[in-house]
Amino acid sequence: MKIITKDDFIDLFSKCKQRGVDYVLSKLTFNRLSRTKSSFNQSKIIHSNWWIIPLVRKRWNILITGKVDKTYEEYMMTEVFQNKKNLKLLSIGSGSCSHEITLAKYDNFEEIVCVDLAQNRINEAKEIAKKLCLKKIKFVCEDIFKYEIEENYYDIIFFHQSLHHIKNVDHFLKTKVYGWLKLSGNVVINEFVGENRMQHSKNQINAINNALEIIPLKYKRRFKTGHLKTKFYGSGILRMVLADPSECVDSSNIIKSLHKHFSPIVEKGFGGNIIMNVLKDISHHFVENNNEKEKILKKLFEFEDAYLKSNKSDFVFGIYQKK
Image (cartoon, rainbow, N blue to C red; front, side, top):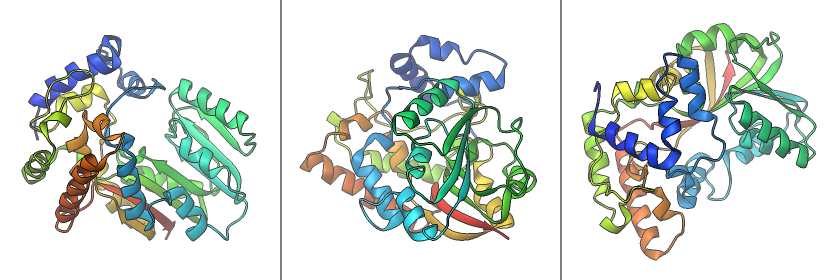
């Protein structure tokens, strides 16, 4: 466990350039909830993370659904819940609600409820749903621990990159989620399930740095700073807690806790151990594709695939049913 690393100072400088000094100053408060909210209350954040790369998203599709152009939402609704009707879904930590809005287009649902702390994101999602004339989806700006939820009400409880923000995952699943679900209810996750606070092992950090060498120097310039990314050091605990006290607070226990209370129907890792960390702050170079960039990404994907043969995936898509 590292208290502080060189990457922490690099990230501080990058955040000032990318999101502004006001964002950084918003972290200088003793209120943990305020620091968490400030991480998500900017709706149109300009960044350079791995998920902005089209070929990365296609890789996720292949690893989760087996088809390059089939998303996990489509997979859910055509291969798992295709025969279900009048479904009621609760999404916890829904953010911009893009995945829930996609699901709301399927006739299988009677009701979709999105709960999130960030009011501006909820407001924007409402406007999008209104334009699309989606009547069965509603949006709630509330702390999930204060929001009143009826027992045995939902068919699906959905987490897209939000369960890893929950402290004491096992207790939450056992005392909250399990009771909110109907007898045959399901939990669906698309989650980071790696080490708490992203405290990567020396083996993983070494592998990330080896993979970073695949990328030519001209594609290593960090977004908005121009500084070269020549080495990955990992995150210190202090930065993780200051930036967002809820970030990966109990992520390493997610899969174990789910297996304790639910039976897996689908569980598929889609990596991230290597490429998320290699591409952080330099992903913008790979949004527009060409033959050279495609070859580089292919080598990175192959490197990560080899790593995953002997290491658990940091990201998992899963569907689980109540025991």
